[in-house]
Length: 174
Image: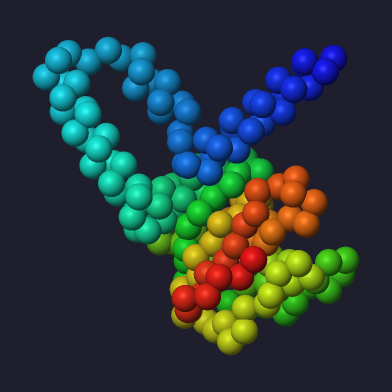
């Protein structure tokens, strides 16, 4: 019983790490099932190096995060740790039922919108946020038919969830 629980916890950790680094496991499986020839292998290695360089830049991470969100929306998936950024298209009233959340809507580079629900009982409020501002985020994506919700943009006092954050005008909120 304990071994089964440890294996389950280990599997969850692996999935979270894969989501954090933006790995597409299906793509990885399809790439590894096709064994390339020597000349193709060199080209493939060069492409992977370029891909890794792009992924390590803020723009590469943002594009990859937007793609993950887009796929999750299409597949109606939730509980996906993502990192991306968007432009504020609306600042909404705080939600004060239960834990207080600062809420705003971001438009991603692909045109999709997501609602950000930032827990201001656990993290500082973003002061002076306005329509047109850019906000970078690292949090958990939850599917909704309106584009999705980004939450867990804060630390977890119980240390049971990956710590998230928001970045606005050079300041990090977590």
